[in-house]
Amino acid sequence: MAEKRTPEAEEYLEAMARAREAGNRPTVSELASALSVSKASVSQMLAKMAQRGLVKCEKYGEIALTQSGAAEGARVLRKHRLIERFLAFIGLRRNVHKEACVLEHAVSDEVEKQMRNAMRHAHPAAVPLTSLGNGESARVAIVDAGTKASQRLADMGLTKGTRLTLIKAAPFKGPVKILVRDTTLALGRSVAGRILVEVSR
Image (cartoon, rainbow, N blue to C red):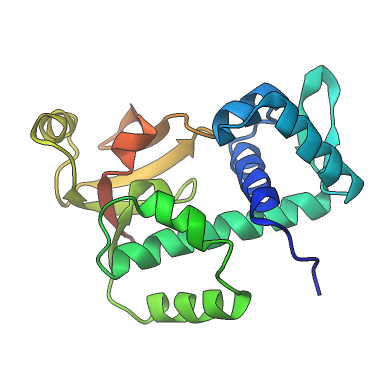
């Protein structure tokens, strides 16, 4: 049975898994900024994680996940995205990412399995654009932004029913790059989180 990680350690693993997915290796400064903690705190946590065989230091101050760390990070990230989709499925429209960050540490593997089964047999539900994985396609269902922001997005072609593909989500709080009608667009993560989509089957 895998060792139980603290919520703090899982946040680090998730952040690094996002960076790895985007083809990057974060530095101590980048992790501190992404997790809103001091660089000293990051260094202390990374030292503990290195002792447990989860991370290793690379050249130029970059931090890399080990094979074990990558597997655990991917697990936390997968669970986070599932919870975001599940919360949207049950009707939550605000603070979906924030709520998922809290719940991902409490949801057991068995509950995750049942949530996944429920989603698999349900009708398509609107989920945050930010919950998509790289290369995943969907259609815009709801633009849950203010009037001005919604108009700007409409001018960019992001209206209900529009098909899009997530090309790449930058690590941490970086922009989300999508393909819409043969045009590549970059959206801020907060704006992207307000666009709810129905995932293509």
